[in-house]
Length: 420
Image (cartoon, rainbow, N blue to C red):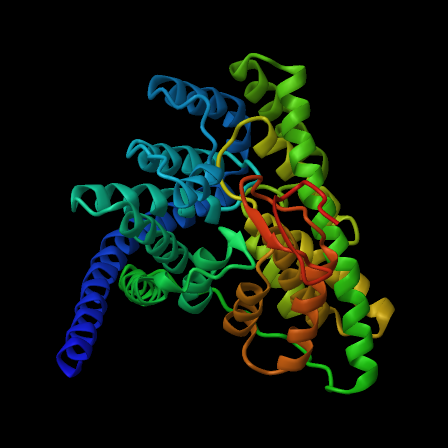
């Protein structure tokens, strides 16, 4: 019996060492590529900011993106949804997906499309991770774990938030079921990737909140109501983005025509309202949180720019635009509720992220890594309310909600399908 127990512990130790090694390899490899990706996006953003006339090239850049996907046989690309499906099934992720999403996202940002970068990072990491696992001749279960820890590595390298990145890939696949079997490799890969990114000069995202509220009953009620509003905004943002994609597909069957017209609309809108809504918009988010500077119409305009950009076929992510929408909406509404604009923007960013991803634990850790560990009870209340009241909408249609948000019930439904 003792020998048997010793063998079990020895086997567990072997598994631990295996995932420490593989997580490290994954973090170093994927982290390096993701860091190069982050550096490229920072570079093209600086170029576009210095030369705003580059927006005129957006329609042509769109044609190049469509051509690249057609040339590589990926015209029906599902993006991040493909990564999510591959973890629940044995679907293969083609290695060509990594360079495609890298190049197309850089083009989108260089010429002023409104998109984020994390969706591209998840696709980049997922593609590299699964193909790395196949190269190592790993079985199906280990292959899924490698895909998840590669997603964590790419997310961590891009944002410099290893805690958030490690939890996100475990939580986002099947909401309500945390894939703890991937915890060790995801944690190792996230930390390693974050360290690699720092060596490339990629600084972590962090914000200084100008004014923190006192933690008392009245402020908790104010935060609860603000979180309620932000949860609905996040849910509406998901609906709007999906509707934009369906509308463009319905109106323009030809993908080249679709993306050219969408790019042209973005050019016209940019000349009408300015360049704040091109690219990811991190500078606007920073102003909202650190300076309390918010325009009332900003969250709506960012939603429109992003809906058109991604809906017509440009590449990138939706999470940073959701940060933008949340920070600007929260910062605008906060003073009406007696909350400082800066703190309201921080709550808005976190809750809208929570609502669009259905990841309350990740959103709470995101708040800690971006804003610090002050006002923890307020962040906790906001994350809980944001998760519940966002309903069953989500950015990723292949994401599954395993348990009801409103009662103790197993529902096993995809997002964007009401269950209760």
